[in-house]
Amino acid sequence: MLFSLKSATAVSAAALSLVFATETFAADVTWNVSLWGKRRAFTEHVEKLAEEVSAKTDGKFEIKLQYGEALSKSRENLDGISFGAFEMAQICASYHPDKNPSLTVLELPFLGVKDLDQEIKVSMKLYEHPAVKEDLGRWNAQALMPSPMPQYNFAGKGDVPSSISDFDGMRVRALGGIGQLMESVGAVPTSVTASETYQAIDSGTVAAASFAPHAHLSFKVVEVANWWTKNLNPGTVQCPVIVNIDAYNALPDDFKAALDSSVEPALAHYLETYDKVYEKWWPELESRGVTQVEFSDAELAAFAEKAGPIQAAWVEEQSANGLPAQDILDMVKSTLAE
Image 1: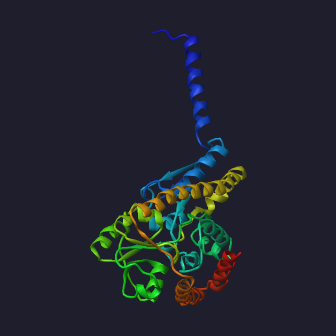
Image 2: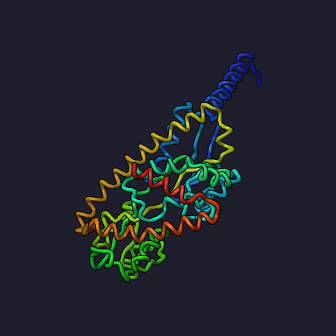
Image 3: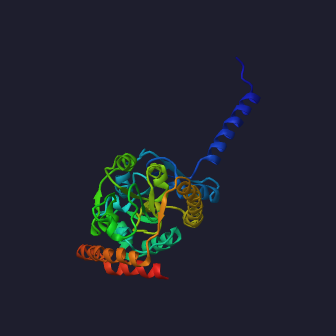
């Protein structure tokens, strides 16, 4: 078969065009993000971050979100970051409190966080504290942004509580600092997985469970509950998005700027997403006739008084471990008071 120069030139041009096309669309830098579960409100800020970074760098900096523990188990994400298995991950401080003790300050009960805006503000301030940077730095990690979780409140079945004494003897699904708080008022914290909570309440194994509103919806607790503590706000969890320090430092300046400047719009998108969750939550409570319990200022003060020794114990324990714990807690409280 004869192969003309003209044909050869056409083929070469096509091949060259393919090479340039590949180079045009290939990212210069790709980061993998280790997440668990599936896309949901809890991960929407990471989704938005990836979109913003891609747009600001014309696709040259790609952030790939890996769900379902494809890269790592949720409780091992901090370890994965430490040895560079991936560049970014979501973690929760309570999954490994001994590895990131400085972050657990925001999981203490009754800090007085009123909304997600406050949670974002105090989290970002915490991440700038030298002791927190040093704490995470042991794992070659630095915090990029929080995954601000609403205050956990209780949804339950049975007699509606109206005072602190009504929790005495009540079996509740409550973990971490919230569990400690409820134990201090006479409740019996019980370890029940999220997926088991519906059945546990329905069968009477536990009377109530503490979740953020979206989880009460997701795990169908609201379908068996007849009351919800609207303003108890005993605490929440601290789940930052972290990055590998070496990977961050290796970024070109313009890519760093793209990443850093994308945090604010990512968090704004997260808040918008949670607004939509609440748009579903309130009508759901109304339609099911769930009693929304609002504790008096005196009762809230009584709860807060019980939280004091728990916070003091945290300070004592973490100070013994070398953290400037009182300074960290004071910073958190002063930030919330502003």
